[in-house]
Image (cartoon, rainbow, N blue to C red; front, side):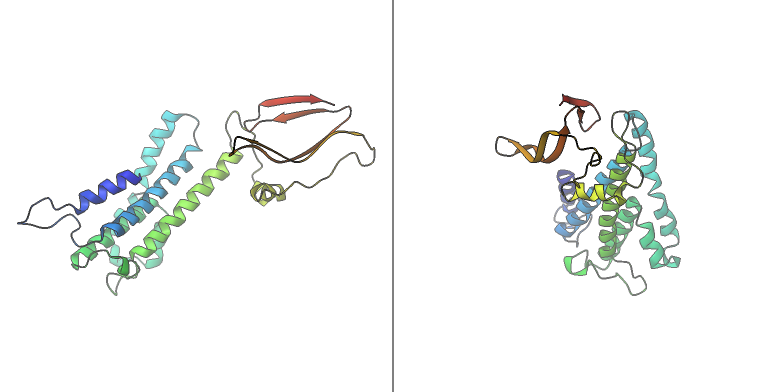
Amino acid sequence: MFVTVTLMVILLKTRWFGDENPNSVFTYSSATALWFFLLTYSITTIMFCFMLSVFFSKADTASSVAGLIWFLIYIPYTFIHLNYDNISLTSKVALCFFSNTAMSLGFNIVIQLEGTQEGLQWHNIFTPVNVDDGLHLGIVIVMLAIDAVLYLLIALYVENIFPGDYGVAEKWNFPLTLKFWRKVFNLPAAEYTSYEMYPIKTGIHLQNLRKVYGNKHVAVERLNFEMKEGEITVLLGHNGAGELMLFS
């Protein structure tokens, strides 16, 4: 997308008609400001694809439904465009949660700025085009960034509670558990045992085990666990498959 956005900006800023007509698609706008706006939209688009992918297990179904949803999230802009002056700023900002609608509103602002012969510049990103409309491109860019974070969080959440046929599903409220936040901040798990009333001799005790291959490939980080005598301990991989069974 980085390469695609760069090529798009080149095409939008190239003067195709020679010296007789020194205009381009966006004659007055800053190329770098346009590039930044399009790159933000591209990042949001990637997160949108991540979000949709976790709801499907088959690529063909995902492609078909995703294409339909992709066009549906543009439809709100058609209603905004027809009644732009009668729609409040709050409604416009709320509809920016649909990334394609936000992108369309952003280009509408750029076109209006081109009409003033000033174009989109870094100094007017957070300035409305006219006093009657409080929406400016800065709001659109911020909303696209919020959309990207929101889409990613939805993707991560759904992927954990519906991991597919081979994953281990988390409970719906796993972000509210202390275990989850210990994992996020890489904190050691609380040390406890259910055998305190019936002491059992420890066979193997590992604390803060770390294994690195080469100089940068970390295979194990801060591994803590105990194996009691007479127990069977099974280590599970990320996808739920049995990696190793140990007898102590």
